[in-house]
Length: 378
Image 1 (spheres, rainbow, N blue to C red):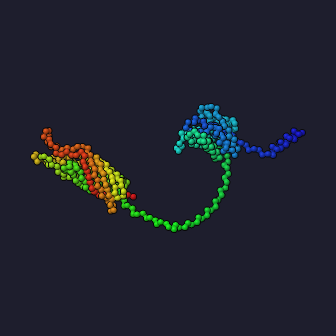
Image 2: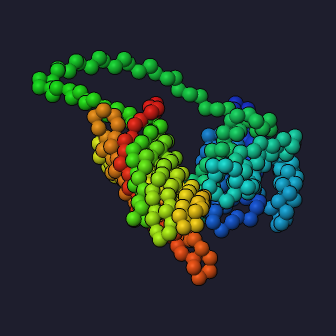
Image 3: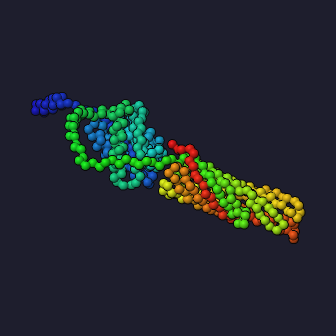
């Protein structure tokens, strides 16, 4: 009689108490691919521990599942689905290593895969692991993997296992900030300084005009003539120039020959400028091609001869420039030209041959002129 009463009492107590909520099983496999030595990946135990902490308030039970030793990750995935069906798991979770995408410095990207064994549907999440082997890095990555799993389950993308997102507390409206009191004016504020007048623009296109001197063809018959150049200045300290000079009518007198020498050098060069606003120093480096003409008169023979040639050269010059208040500059330049061909003019043949003119290989150059801006930059 006492046993029957105890059994009846126990049955009534169970009937009166609420049934516990049914739990769902989540099976967790480790990372299926071989881990490179430069990565620090958590083991399945640390991963399961992090999942238990994040899913502690839900009706999800987390359990580890070690593969049976298959080398092929695809075989491990098929085995995981089979074991999930046998154990009645609502979802099976594992990770794979895939090539990284843009923005991930790690050699591999960690891809989490959530599989519903019953329907075969899956959800993927990608994480970029940290490079290194520190224990703290593994723990942080394990927590990030657990949080990514929790968010995927709360998003409802896996029908077999859906978690409700936690309810958010109502947002309280913050009280209005009281108006700040007005600050009193500074009793002795310094007077504002107005900027002075800006320097006028020096233009992106500049005209250089003046006179030029050259020791060619010889110091006894040095050349003088006008010079004209056009300079493009993409920057105030940089110029790309194209110029021409004209040297005509320099008389050369030698025995039995009366000659007249002239040349027209065509020049292209690049100039770099340094200095203050008004005063500037610069360096020209460029190329030169001179068209030369020699008109020779042979009085004893009663004949004339004309010789025309091209003479290439490289040039280098130093310049000084002063910008006047009227927005034009006065420029002085000196330098040298190294001629690549040694031009020599002779008369006669054989033993009676005599030199009329032997032009210099290195000549001294100088010039004085004005720099006038033509087109102003924006």
